[in-house]
Length: 408
Image (cartoon, rainbow, N blue to C red):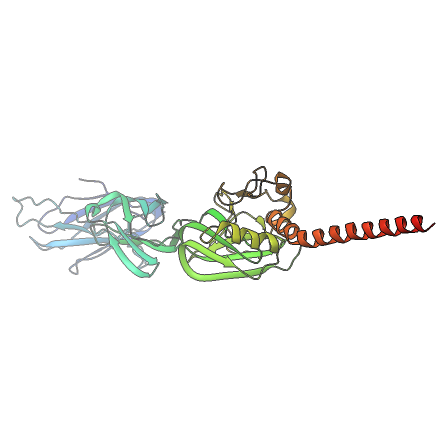
């Protein structure tokens, strides 16, 4: 006969000597104790007389050709120490032999272990686990707009190695999940809730540039790798009076025109952007200088419409990210110098010959050479009159002296 192991220390269960009206059951217990066997169909209860580890019961007064089941319990106690039921069928006559049929009812849930989350990206993840017996593969997912979404792997309906691929997830999102596995007898194991977080694309600021600098304003532009808001913080260098301009629209190309600046003044500025997950990115802290009033006016008249006085070109890489910006600009004394880029047709070269042919005028500030020359030309008539007056006065004085000499 077959041997059976059970969860409560019952081993070597055997049913033998089956006749048309009797049968024998034997088994072992882990410790010496009194036990009883209860027979179905009102065939009675059989108990040990003393505590023992090897047990034997002869079941009597059975009906021919009838199926019976036996359960093992502690003596004088209804506590079943073996949840299995052992079935057999008596013979119809002494000449026929019917082997007993033992049917074990499975009430044990699968054991889930080795749970792991891997291959996490901005929009997907993979959950794997093991069970100690063949069972189904199910994950219940919540988070990112989902609540209790049931995800099954139909290709793993009865396996011990389980995996579920989760797709179409949201970035920077915490998801919770429960694992379920059910065996062929309908016993289902369910884990406690666990969680994981998807990755996200951090905003990165690049191509920061400033142009259209004049005596009272400038234009600042930059690019981000994803849609973000825009903000510029600026202040006069070595002061703490920080001003902020911002735009809450989420874009990748950012553009601000600053106005109301002081002429001939150095400014420090920094650009900032934040995405929909409140992840901040910062551009490098840089500085620029507004033009003087005379310089701005001269540049405007000499360059003509459509040209700019100069462009500050700033190459950048990704700035730091932080969900809680403090709103302070870094120390401007440690800033890298901004590079002013101009073209030959925008601003006259210092060593060129001006249109008046007077090379010494090139040493004067831009626009002053023409002014000096025009002023000198306007003084010529006055100088001529003064010279004539001086000559006339000298001649008059000379005649006076000669007249006095003759009179003597």
